Image (cartoon, rainbow, N blue to C red; front, side, top):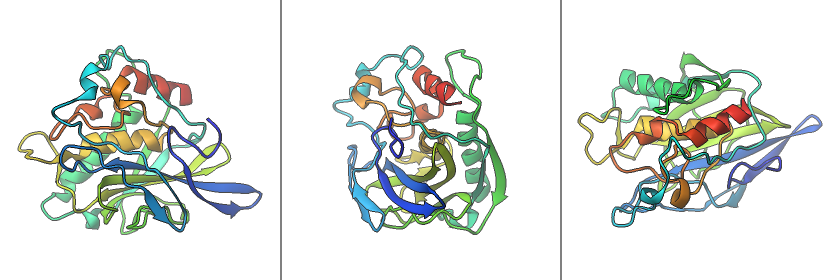
Length: 262
């Protein structure tokens, strides 16, 4: 893929950085509304264009049901930019919505990132992924995304937190690219969405682990794959359903994409 693109994503803006260009990209997870994916365009000072989304399938017509088993599906989309160092990230714990335990949320976030860096899968495939992450602890710094869903200027900090997002989105990830390197990535989850930290006791909610594992794939350079043809992979556009955690386990294509990049 050409520089400044990832999967079906589009560059949101550029900021001069010496002789290079610092490119901000935004990728999204869509909130399930009435069981259908919500494809809401993003607009703001950093540009305009369609967002990437992940949402539950329409129950009456699940296109992912026709997809191959995730352990045999080799599809992936990988962008050119990669990290050349561990992704050192922090959690804005004071942004956690009421009703969610901060400690439990923190544990789930850390586990979701390890799902990617540790190549978690049910396919019996060993960990051949060289991507790394390091958790720095809690912070009061906010992720660099506006409530309109646009990327702010890079600040040298990688943060996951909750906050206001455009209607229809459960989460957004911004990455900042310098040349062929990803130099920063922030993730924001919608405070108004209904979240759960585990399958046990989940009622009409999205599992944080499933959404964040998908978004972490974007953090490390993966783009979307077709829902209709590859709907059981973590990087497909829609979640498998409410109160499910399928996206937290990588499929063969997800693993192959990460192995190519790292």
